[in-house]
Image (tube, rainbow, N blue to C red; front, side, top):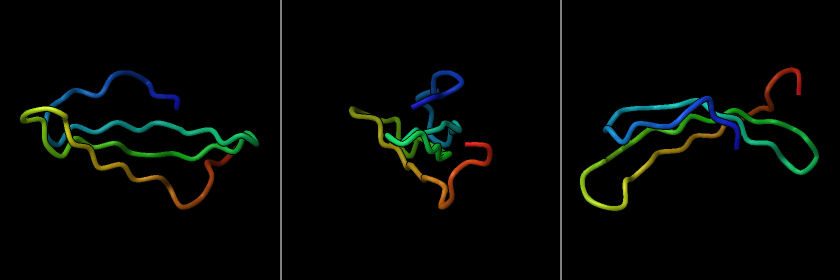
Length: 55
């Protein structure tokens, strides 16, 4: 997974990243912190329906 930085452990914080499949196809994803109270931190992860352009 390729991300531009770290995701802050604050409810509502989000970050766009890319996943790369074995065949080199890349998909974007957004990770959003749902809850940062307690351990572990809970996330909502949504992968794009289509590959990233230029992959």
